[in-house]
Length: 259
Image (cartoon, rainbow, N blue to C red):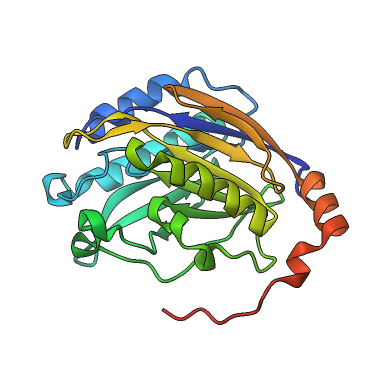
């Protein structure tokens, strides 16, 4: 039987460009201040490198090192950790999100929508499957950055309670990030979490954070523009009560999603 509350930590941090060792060390330092009651720690997109279009610059062994690091940190702090990295498999690179649990369970999601404006489609293969993680009684649907612009891919067909986006979303388009996170929460009657990086990358793009959590009515629970760890408590009975009262999901349109 699952629990009624899920405690989330959102790590909004600058990232060292294409330097996995430095980023892991920095995050390990931040983890030392984690609340002991955290159930899930959410890291930004490509949290070991920044949003690089040159994954070949990174030793392929770094993926295994990062996964081992996530396993160790998850066990140490008895929490789940999620975030995406540049990962190579079968000759292809993927922008892959790992969800690592304290007991060693690992699941992953490959970014569905490549960011063509930056040429991500020319570098990274895309995923074809959504992932729903059943964790402590909450069903979590993880997605990555540009996926946020595509509501059909995230449409709740009654199979999740929490929608999570990890991102490297630049300041110049941050208004879209804010609006779409809120919209995804409202239209899907779910919690919606967005974790963005802050600071500057090697191309000079600035990232202003705006990591946030919204409830299923679009009410903002937490928000920040600064380097920080944000905390939010999600409540299962809150979702259940509002869905039973309002029943908006019962009126949704049916559709068939094609690749």
